[in-house]
Length: 335
Length: 236
Image 1: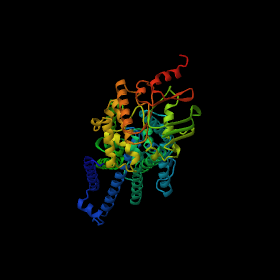
Image 2: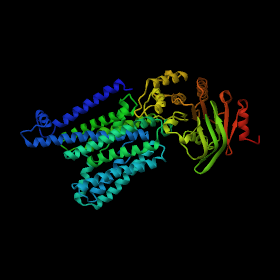
Image 3: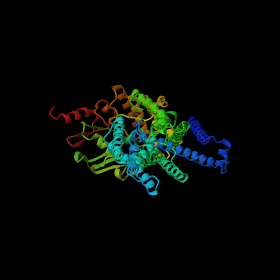
Image 4: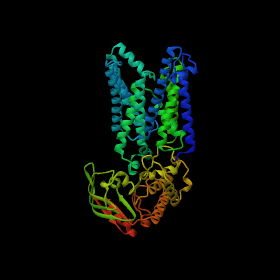
């Protein structure tokens, strides 16, 4: 049953996201009149030919931000529900690190970013890293009961891939290491138009797929055994969770860098703000709120003239939410 | 309702116990035995979660392993000893989880789902808890709600794995009252494992005892206590 307060909440975030989206189109270091922006978006032309290019790049990064934030938040929501752990997320569990390792192998290993085969190798390698990390984590999680221990395991996986990346770093030349460092800072600005659309489609498809785990996630709130006795196939759920979260986190990480905190903080906020416990509603809510936060962060990044890296901004928002969750978790043994 | 034939239960290659033949119908049945004797594994086998056994388990004439997961969930429900909920669900929402086997992929609840939740809450006399947050309840209240959730699942067979393990004697008494109410209300089969012999003779039809690799069935409520003692301490 959709509760009225949830409908209002969703409408509110949706409006806010739309507002930020529009704001991101009309603001920037280059002052372009709002009328001209609207004109350009509806297919018109401007007196200044550079403006057309700038507006297109603003549009691209806006929807890339929306999709990326949404994807990370969604991956976080699924991971938290699956592991029944309010602190799980694609970054803390090391899934983003797996993707980073995949990226590092390609970037630091010398394959160029610009050639087509290099680009494809980058995507496949990144997604492969994320999926591999997810599988590793799940095989370890069978032996781990405490939710905090699982996070520590995830962090260790993260450190381990970090160590391998450091070794690669030593072996790479200066040009490659620079490309890699810039990538790790995170950014929503990497795309040409077609690539951006492809990215958007991939994320939307994975997000739609995630609706099919909503029932399993609803059942898993009482744990694996209860879920199983409610008719949920644990094996199939596990495969779907690995696939969807690995793909979502992998794709975003490859293109935007290891963007942290959105994946952990947003599901927390959703669980707190929403009345409904049905993941069918929580999934779109997390996606929209993730997009909202990502665009908000991107606006701050752009207002700073690009001097603040994306990850610095997301950390400022996300870290307090996580600290607050930790305090609440310790006050009551379970959340 | 629940039938075992030539049943041998094992775990990790080790035989836990044998059960040549047993048929249970509606009523309450206590499952007893020492730690590690295989009570939980036995219940998990009935739930289809443990496959390491030979022989046959049948529910209403059909082998457990032949069921689709979702169909089995309409035959057997379960209560474990300590519920741990992730999220801030109200009691009503936890009870509603029992309807998942009947809901399609989007977990949409129907009018009849809501009706069943209300009926079960009335039966267990927990209506006053319905809008409370589950994680803030006491262990005893939580366990009553978990029994409620299993009843909402509306299955002929109800399994409980040490449902009273963490309860004090007052809450244990409440749990027994609830089980009696369920038995009076329906023709359910309740099979529950326990270490407590108090109250057994009040409402149990049989005691199934696992000892020395065999399952023994005691059918005399008046002498449950004595029979159980004799099995554990044959020299006395």
